[in-house]
Length: 538
Image 1 (cartoon, rainbow, N blue to C red):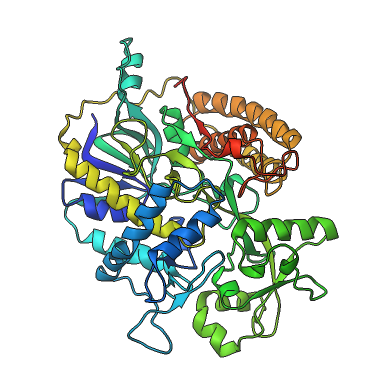
Image 2: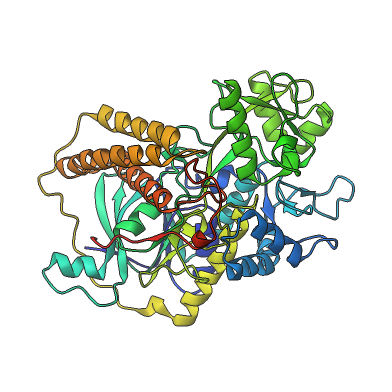
């Protein structure tokens, strides 16, 4: 017996919840998220803020130009125009539902605006240095009040169910135009797999930073939506463009902690242990160059000089100013005995954001009918080969709105929802070898960091390709032999995502934006196109 809903949203971050709030005006929305704490998401950890043209001395043309420059020739102009021009309206909606952005210290009637790398103007609205958490809080509070929205924690999506898959399973001929019918979901409260039927499925599962050994992402960022869409036959694009944030804290007691780019926008300077400010040797914009340039510069200094880390210098600001502007970062650093007003902050690059993902159009629609992808799970073309800082939360809102508008206009929620096949457990048994999952997880993250990191070579990529093929075989066997668990689902998705990154990286024989290879160190005009791949064996 299937569970039924008009729209099934997988993921409870900013994109998923903003979409749910809008879609609930047209029908029943069920949001599933794999954690017990339903606000847990990649969005929640966004520190810097949300970019939008807000001040009189800024303009849409400025923001568009900054985004195109950062994207290294690969941005989709229409996506940039849509996001920048409609962005301020979406931000105003956040404010209307109760998001409390930080007011200007000089004028309480105006908002404080940060400037970050690659931006020509101050346009980053923020809630101190916990912007993502504040946006997610406000969205969840409003969604909790809506009678048409149901949020289910501890529900892990396993796979999408499509008409083609159902037809092949029953021995019928697959439909000419495939469409999504719902998803299989592991209810972790009772360890039962449920079939959820829905006219519309929206993937809003965030990114996949946990595919790398060092990341700013929380443990849940395992590429679930991208992997599920791939297995369902949806087009995936530009997975080679993984953004490594230049400044993650380097400290054994506080791992995966992000040091916001806003600090460099506030005058922070990157230094070597001897005090040298080295960024002027790499780019005329120095510490405010786009993230790909800064991350590669740091990576080069670390390797060339055999360093463990470089340092961010914020000592030009007083202790009171730092505590007021960056209360969360200040508190976290002091917990490991680092005082920004007197001490240098040890930093290293870490995997942060996926510019690629499930390929969508300007409405967030994938190549599979009735399947949408929004937020970091998607590849809209906004970011091109490198995301401009703080454009991600804006993109999440803009495309959530666009998807909802198209669905409402087409009235697709009125389609019949067939009864879905029950989950087939087969002869799978319970596993008592959790160590295998942990070992494989660690292995993937290590070889992805070493072979498919900030600087790549063809030889390293081929080595990673061979390793991931072997790991995939092991996981596949384990998947069918043992009963499904949340850890196994995440491992399977992590391995698939790693495979997609490697495959796309091998196809791009040039260096552009976030993809830098020593074998092809220059950009090549023949590759000014998306790297689009599709699973034809699903």
